[in-house]
Amino acid sequence: MQRRTYLIGLVALAAVACAAFVSGSSPPATAPAAAKVIAVAATAGTFGLPELSKNSQECIDCHREESRAIYQMWGASKHAGANIGCYECHAAEGDDPDAMRGHYDGPPISVIVSPRDCARCHEKEVEEFIGSHHSKGARILGSLDNVLAEVVEGNRAFVTPGFPEGNAASAVSGCWQCHGSQVKVLPDGRLDPATWPNTGIGRINPDGSEGSCSACHSRHTFSVEQARNPENCGKCHMGPDHPQLEVYNESKHGIAFHANKHRMNLDSPKWIVGEDYWHAPTCATCHMSATVNQPVTHDVGMRISWNNRPAVSIRPEVSDAKMGLPGANIPWQTRRQNMYDVCLNCHDQTWVDNFYIQYDGLVELYNEKFAKPSIALNTAAKAAKELPGVDFTHEADWAFWELWHHEGRRARHGASMMGPDYTHWHGTYDVAKTFYTHFVPALRDLIEEAHESGDADRIAAADALQSKLDEILNSDDHKWFLGKMDPTEAARRKEAAEEFKSRYDK
Image (cartoon, rainbow, N blue to C red):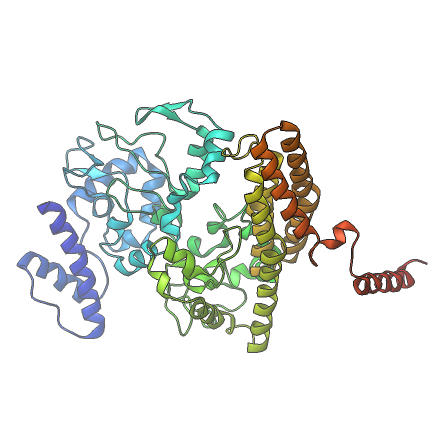
């Protein structure tokens, strides 16, 4: 404990000295050895240590030969320029759960550098990150996503020392690599292969901290330029259920970025939109990076005014409250104003106002026409199933899942980031197709199956489901499907069709 505490003190005091030097104030009184570090750092006017530590130098002497790429990456980093070496980040106490002993002749080290370790120098950034949904990504374990990966797609054939009962390889190499695993340390100090390597954003570390800074700040360069690139977010934010990267690339924002990437000053230490760059925004610009009025934030939820992850979109403070996050006290209106501040660097007030009217309209359409009715139908359908307590055993289960988890998210994310193709053809079109041609027919089949079963409880549940289905399909949103379109709307559609033909049917 004494060694690590002393090390942490040296690094922290160097940072204090740097701040004192810049502000012109005097550093606080400290122990003589630490005072020497402060004096050197203050004289240099830079953050860091006066020289590379002996322990770090020993690491480098080996890794220079054994893992050249890691050595080169570190050498190109700001850490290297500040004499922050391997040991300053990987230092461990002898009683730490993941402490490695005998790796070399020096003191114990830990393979994993957790947010708690990064917080020695980056306290504000880690505090914001820990309060965000990102750091809680591993809490997906136990959700229906994991039922799919571990049971429906997988089995328990992937046996490791830390999991003698086995795991599903589909979850280990899939879900856990984005959401994060709970890293298990074996008795000899090695990390269980089911849980390491892992840079999932919500990784649960042996020291009890949640999250992985290296999910975004790839080791060992920790390049700010790389972190600002949209592709950096695309490791996780892509694919059929949350295609943010694809939506961004389709949008005018993405088009402008790729055309002007060489003008974006992505490696600039100060990176303020409107000052240091203005040709395009990236994911970081909108969700994290500084504006003239806002500092950088590592809580990506502070500029989001809808949470489009659930089956029905909710306000972010609602989901934050469910997870016990500090954002529970930040209303969506405040978060929207934060994003307004970003948008207004390139767009005028009317443009931004009207965008949000369009976006809210799409979310409202999806919520009211499809999400809420589908949830009501799915709830009623469960009791009519042969296996009411088992998910993904009937076509209705799969159709409902696809409708909200994939297609409904695509529609909402497409609208949020101005990707029209994902809003429509990959979004609301697929939502409607699934609802009318898969979900409703599957519910009708389920009703018939229940009646044929002879089970009184299933028959009663099927009758209740039929009543709910009739109610929803006869509503204004869906009665067209029964051939009951409102006469006024039917006349409007006929007029529009005739006008279309007059232009093109020649």
